[in-house]
Length: 247
Figure 1 (tube, rainbow, N blue to C red):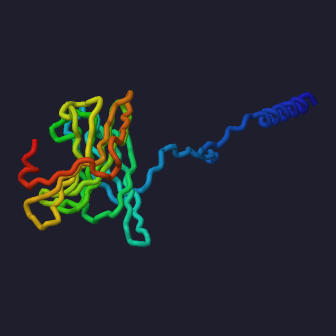
Figure 2 (figure 1 turned 60 degrees about the vertical axis):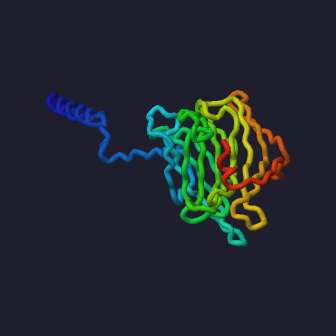
Figure 3 (figure 1 turned 180 degrees about the horizontal axis):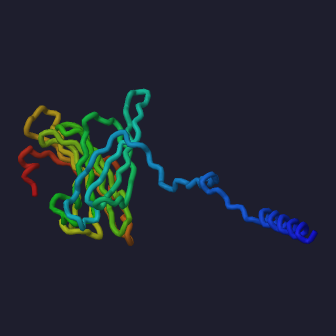
């Protein structure tokens, strides 16, 4: 009898151990839920066409090049095409600023160009950046933009149109201490030189209009129109040679 009871106790203890034996999860078959990571990248318009405007080969230049991205083109009821561009300013591989411009009467085959400084004689380390866009041939209108980039801030200071055809045309002339790096003030005016109405091939009329002053306030440029808009304040007849021999 004692052996019988001993056998029963051993069987009972064995059953209890099997019931309390911990279960190990099969990780190979456990489904781990996916965590959705939100896309925090800034969405930008898809570019229809991209052109590169080279400004400097110097690695230390504040802006080395600009990518001109065509992001939209629309034609109105008169078939006038307006193109929108996003200009991305780069220092080597790093984008440092962006700006958008709209251009009417887009000519297929038009090209971008750019340079540092208010004029071609300005310091090449100037914070001013001039950008031009137009069809590379005489008689076509160019769109011109003057930007100012300093300490990470970008400002479109001025914009204008220009046209040149064999010495005749219209353009903007900058006046003041514009040969240095960054003047604190300067002026500009629109200069036009057109043939006279008397069919003289050598005589033209020069006009000045839209005299404008620019002054730096902090890190921001302010401009003020000093003459009546679109109305000449100076007019004079000059021969072709006289006009182009001026200093």
